[in-house]
Image 1 (tube, rainbow, N blue to C red):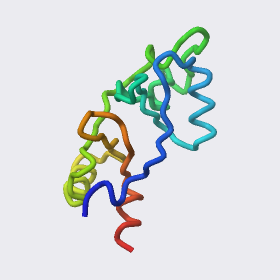
Image 2 (image 1 turned 45 degrees about the horizontal axis):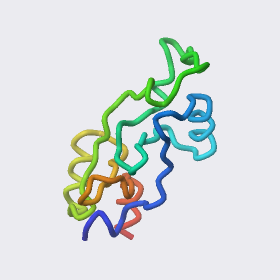
Image 3 (image 1 turned 90 degrees about the vertical axis):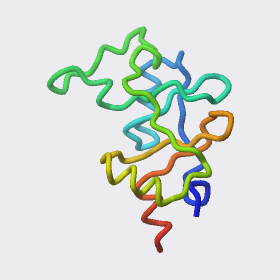
Image 4 (image 1 turned 180 degrees about the vertical axis):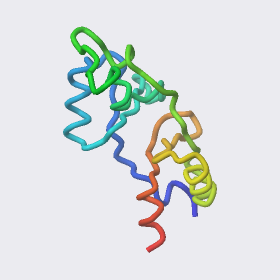
Length: 123
């Protein structure tokens, strides 16, 4: 069984020039705590998480005039679409990560695989 058979294909993404205010709205509307930032070709550039938007003790980063590119906090941790599900399970378990992004042969973002996706595949 490969990642392609269990991944979520509809990934909410943001572009580097998206204003932070819109990024926060996208997070709230999607119910996601982290969104990948992709370029115009669908190539992942990084990830913006809620943690990237908070300064110190629950003080939100001033959003005025800032873009997603300015607040990217982490590089994209990705696996190839044809990786075995067992490999992804080991990576998620070993690192404590919640999700891995999925790329195709050209490096374009094509999905995301989460712990929840793996649990569903076991049913």
